[in-house]
View 1 (cartoon, rainbow, N blue to C red):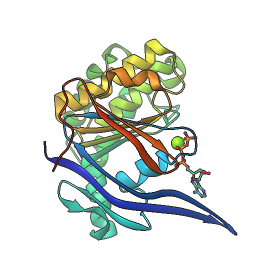
View 2 (cartoon, rainbow, N blue to C red):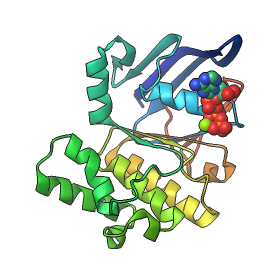
View 3 (spheres, helix red, strand yellow):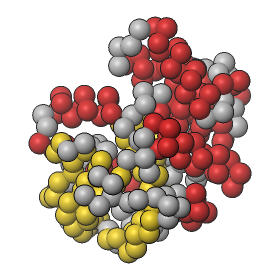
Length: 236
Ligand SMILES: Nc1ncnc2c1ncn2[C@@H]1O[C@H](COP(=O)(O)OP(=O)(O)OP(=O)(O)O)[C@@H](O)[C@H]1O
Ligand SMILES: [Mg+2]
């Protein structure tokens, strides 16, 4: 299966004062569309850094990242912003929802940014809530929703524009296993239904059974890479 997202020899070192932390040490990775890849690793192993680099949020010190055959860091800043707006969804750790907005309004927000007509924004947002099983919660605000529901609203928001790439940083960390499973199932459907390349970062090994591919990281390097459940993995 062709690679939708490719990282080649990516390195990243953070410097604060005299302290240098070498986080990624020449990491290469090819990810396929229609698959949910889980990146596992202990705290501090560089998972969030890798996710930020893969999604075009953070520039690596060296190496390349290309998505859909385009080198992200050869784009102008404006083109990179446009690419991210149009093609990527990001689920941040800790929901990141606006307290005053209803579930539906949260999900409509990025669609408004894309400049879609009002009725399309509403319909697409409702369809997205339906996708995560929360259409009946559309008019509730975050304080009226459970942790698992809030996380699924955050996923609905990220997938509403049907992005080619969906990135999720520890989307289940605050959830019990039942809600964690619902969240991972929702991410899986995004890969299957929309053909998206879905990358989920976690230290929760319980998510492994439901993923197509599991990459284990340690100290900024890949420790193991396993394709399962009949998935293809990216080869080219
Ligand atoms: N902006 C920054 N400036 C300096 N050091 C940083 C910065 N961001 C991360 N680091 C350091 O880089 C290392 C990797 O951080 P990263 O957030 O990628 O790890 P992680 O695997 O996501 O960890 P966790 O599971 O705790 O979220 C850590 O040692 C961290 O302290
Ligand atoms: Mg992290």
